[in-house]
Image (tube, rainbow, N blue to C red; front, top):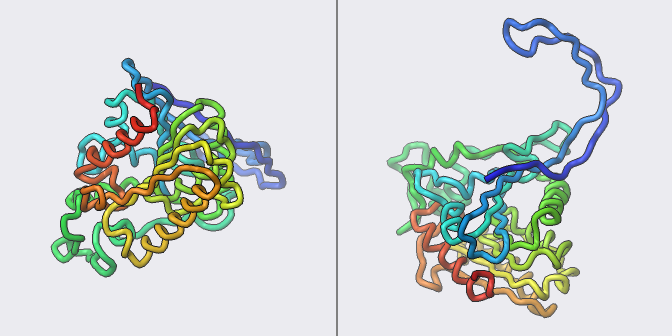
Length: 310
């Protein structure tokens, strides 16, 4: 087990006022000059190397918007998450906090304002319950029938949220490319916002990304570059209540069109809707759902079919 930071660049500030400040209560004042070079846009990654390796390549796990690598660690209800599952399956695993998130740090030089999610937003947007189902009163909240998310741990889940920006995709992708250059060839597992990052990094490094699994990607890659993906097996997976959802139905349709474009360019994409394979009740956060191991098994078996497991 270890960790490192990667990527980023230097920026330089000039003409800022010099001030005197106290860094800790009761400390001595110090003159602070903010002018000079700064390191920005780096990314944090943590890795876990198994003793009995079965995965032929490292597995990189990238989280979605407004979240961090915690997505794949212990679930909000306290039970083991996908990190533990894939370690048990014998994968060397890398989990990262995307540039701007968590331990990667951030800068006030990003364009625009950070976005924070109100407490009730993911309840409906991540399909714990249908539109209009959130209520501040727990007793009045409505879920989808048979939902697998541990609703008693919803508030615990919301403590994972971190600010995000909607203007930093290029910097995030640049850091992921540097990560891939460092540790790959590899297999990449992405979620939600990271779907677009996974597709675009694979387009940029088709010799290093040997397989890509996108769980409920919210975005796509460049349709003009799908030929770069022709030798990369891809799986796209959606949970329950996505096909007919006012928002997720359109997202899924857009991704399905992108998958068709990849196939048209000679590539291979397996589009899996979990209810169609008998797994029901999963939300957008399937890695946190009660049956998360069952969903992870779908991914593991896909890896096995693609010859990625010894």
